[in-house]
Length: 79
Image (cartoon, rainbow, N blue to C red; front, side, top):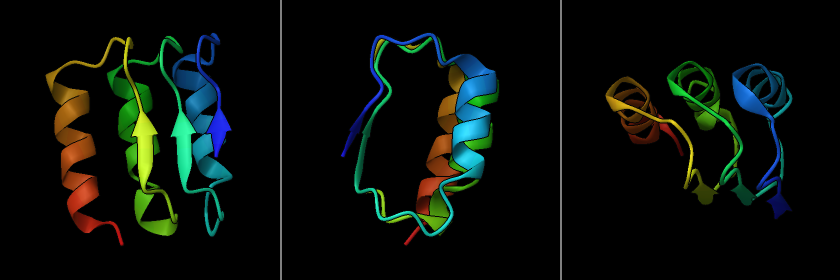
């Protein structure tokens, strides 16, 4: 479990973080209020199938329809 809530990670930070997630043993991440938008969610969600994540909190971020759609599509493809 990792709590990164209330940080200014933003789209660039979550992109960098996502690139390190492959084969990670993390099962829970809190990204609430981390200044993440559609672009960051799209890049992050593309890595989901390579993780063991079971819980992700994106509460309080600027995720719109495009980000939600990308997340939903990639969740369907994840383990």
